[in-house]
Length: 166
Image 1 (cartoon, rainbow, N blue to C red):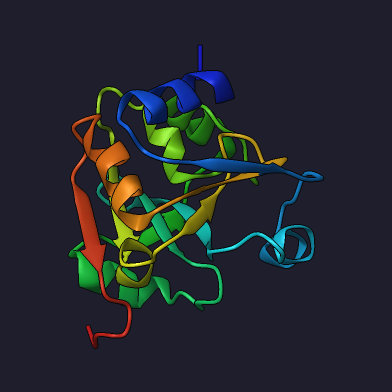
Image 2 (image 1 turned 180 degrees about the vertical axis):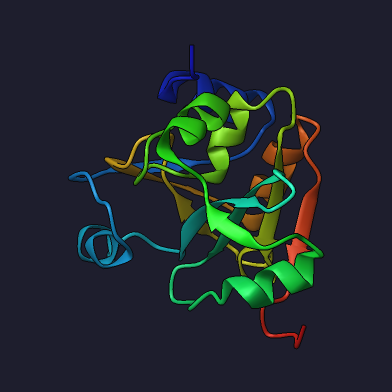
């Protein structure tokens, strides 16, 4: 059974990661999220659940205002050709539905099937906002806190500078 919001918060607390959560209407796009959470301090993110041609699974967390060129991203990461992961695979591996994709969902990937890629801007942000497993709230942590959370499950954090030529 996938982790709950309470499970997520308990893990953040156990790791000593400060967090604040803001409830809002469910959002499915960056535009909807901005309308609902524009008042929430910090860098807003978007998350891409990807599968490459070799079958490797990826979660890329980038600044919400970035336009992501998948060919550029795959070149930076040394991945095969990317396509978006299917909703049933997303639920199987990360325990979330489309619209709720978040780096916090790595709590549901104890087998480390997903490779995590983090935009350098997000990694260095003082405060970032991500869904706490559901798209009806935003949880604020530091970039360092997010990296510590992800690492606590044995996942590597692959920092990617999207401003670097491939």
